[in-house]
Length: 64
Picture 1 (cartoon, rainbow, N blue to C red):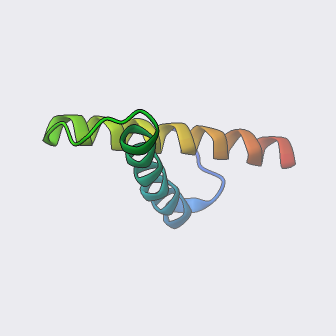
Picture 2 (cartoon, rainbow, N blue to C red):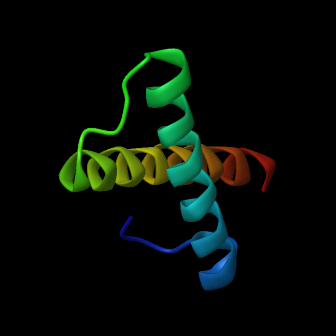
């Protein structure tokens, strides 16, 4: 995600990785979708990372 991040590069990377795992978990366990190939996996991981980073930015802006 473009723009300044309140936690720095390391925190951003860790939140992105966690978001990718959460995105995969949601699609596989909650929606019942199995692995759909390389492109689907990259898409889900990217969307999960973006959503979690956006939530993190909202939380840190309100707390500051």
